[in-house]
Length: 436
Image 1 (tube, rainbow, N blue to C red):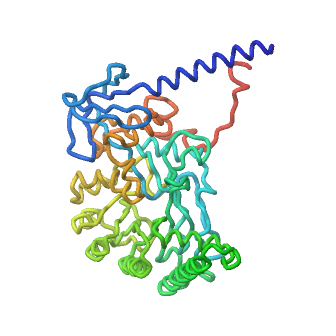
Image 2: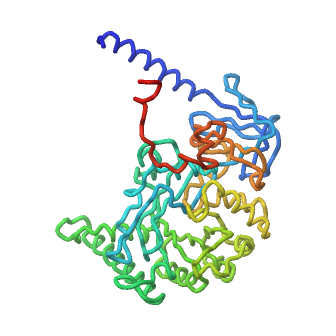
């Protein structure tokens, strides 16, 4: 091809790119929907205005002035609510620690996530916009989690949420109970499990003290230890512990460890949480719970109750739901709130448990979890009430960009399943199309 032709093509591409940028800067007004803002009461005939990935206005039609240059989207008969937050997911095929040790805080889950995994698109189809992706729970400590926005991207950095200092946002995954009890080097009893955890925290405190005593002198600094560095972040409150636990006695063991070492904590699963709800509330520890209708073979879930969320909430515990995908399919996540309401949880608290409660547990409440001016434009459009089995997620938006559209055949496939819906990466057969 002639060089002049290349120049023409580049000029055209530049114009197209420029026009797209202009389109993205243009305000978008979503009108006529029933709005569930989470930050207040639900209301009809709502208006949501977004621009540059942020919410610029939200309210009833008679109280919001739509910019004259806004592109309007009529959502009459539909509903809008914030994007759903999943505080405990395994989409993307994450892996953490291996069989060499029971505690491996140096392992980073992000080093084993395939962001092109079909599970991420299925989560988008379920209205999920933010996830805490965790390694498995077969270890006392299986590694560092990572918080992702479910943007359309090709690499982990396209989706990763960053802290103010530019580091990757995430927590630390820990577990107790039967999951981590096995032959050496893993513990064989619950008591030994707790002892090993205490031992690691004591080592981390000693490592931190050595660094303080060195006072910046390289000759006095201890040899670098990645595992201890990660645990110091936990002890200093920079990294929250997301702790898998089911049985009532295991829950209390975690609370004792938290009181002893002072780390920030979110209890996950908490099947027996309703049995010790007062103790959890007194410790001011939030719970990310799972609502499943077929607990399967795990002995610790034998006393599972759909009323768990209602009882914990009544006791004053901050409650969120999670999928533990694939224990609960991300596309069916909204049913968790519906089942909890059926068992006595107030509707508003159940919807908060899908949104702002999870945001608080990830310390992202200033950016996501509710429809408020200045927050990220993460929202979903539904065909009907989010707690109805007849409702569908029609569209999902992350940072103001549509990442799922049920009317698109490709997205519809991920929403309902079928051949090709579970392929992580399809072969590119462009050369065989149209006889080329």
